[in-house]
Image 1 (cartoon, rainbow over the protein chains, first blue to last red):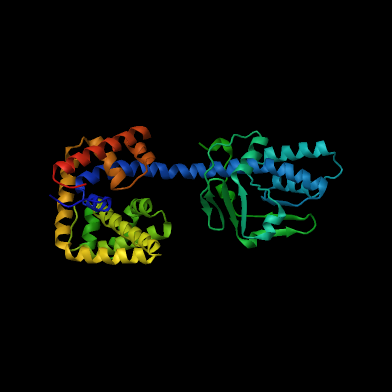
Image 2: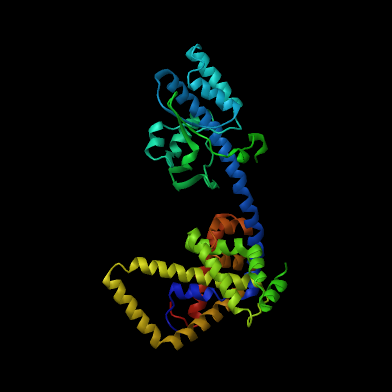
Length: 207
Length: 186
C-alpha cells in the first residue's frame, strides 16, 4: 500500500505532467490569453470615456450647485469644452438664468465626450491630496441620473501618474500626482490636469 | 526566435538567451505565477528566478519544449513562494511552530520513501491523464497545472463555465478511483 496522499503532494505531482500533454494546453491558452489581453485595453478606453461622459454629467449638477450656492467643486479636464463648463461654474456667465445655465452646461458636457471630468468635493481633495475616493455606487447613481447605462465597471492602472485602481467591490481609488492639483482661489475650485488625453477616444470608435 | 535557437543561446552561455526568453515567454510565465500568488511583485520575482534557474540548468538540460520546461520551473517556484508566505502567516502561534518542526523531522526520516512515492504518484497521474480524451485532459491541466480560472478555461476550450465545472468534478472523481485502484490511500 502506497502512502496517504495529501492535496499538496498531488499538486507537486501535477508539476511533472508530460511535456507533450502540457504543450497542447500551452497552444490553446496562448491564443486566448493574447486576445484577452487586448480586450481590457479597449475596455479601459471605454470605461474612461464612459466615466468621462458620466462624470461630465455629474459635474453639471455640482457645477450648477457651486454656481448658485457657492459650494466647492473639484474638476479635471483641459480642453476648450471643459473650459466652457468651468467658466460657467466659476460664474462668468452669471447673467444667465438657472435654466439657461443648466442647458448650456449640459450642451457643453454633451459636446465634451473627449474630455474627462470628475467631480468630487474639495474637502476630499484637500484631506488627502494624492488619493481620492468615490464609490462605484456614486458613479453609477450619477450615471443613471445622466441616463447612461452602468455596464460592467472595471478599473485598471492606466498611466504612471494617473491611475484608477480597483480596490473593493464597491470602491475605487483615483490617484493623481500632487503637482497636477491646482487650487483656483478665485472660484474655490480644485482643478486637476492629468495627462490622459491620448487615452481618450470618441465613443463610436470603441468596440 | 525559435525555441531551439533560444536553447542554443543558453548552451552557448550567451546572456541574450534570457532576453529572448523574456520577449517570448514573460507574459506566459507571469500569468502562471500570478494565478498562484495573486501578487504582481512576487510574481515578477518568481519569473526572474525562473530565468536564473533556466540559465543555471541549461546546459546540461536541453528541453525539447521550452515553454513547458519554463512553465514547470515557474509553477514550482511560485508554489514554493506561496507555501513560504502562508507558512510565515501561520507561524503566529507556538503550536504552529512545533507542528512545523515535527513535520521537518518526519520528512527527513522518510525522505527516500517520500521521493519514491512522489515519483510513483507522478507516474500514475501521467498514466491517468493519457487515458483521458484531449478535451477533458486539457480542462484538467488548465485548472490544476496552470491554475487558470474556470472562466479562462471555458474561454480557451470553447465550453461554458458550467461545463468546465462539471468536467472537473467528474475528472476529480475518476482520478480518485484511479489512484485507489493503483494502491494509493486517499
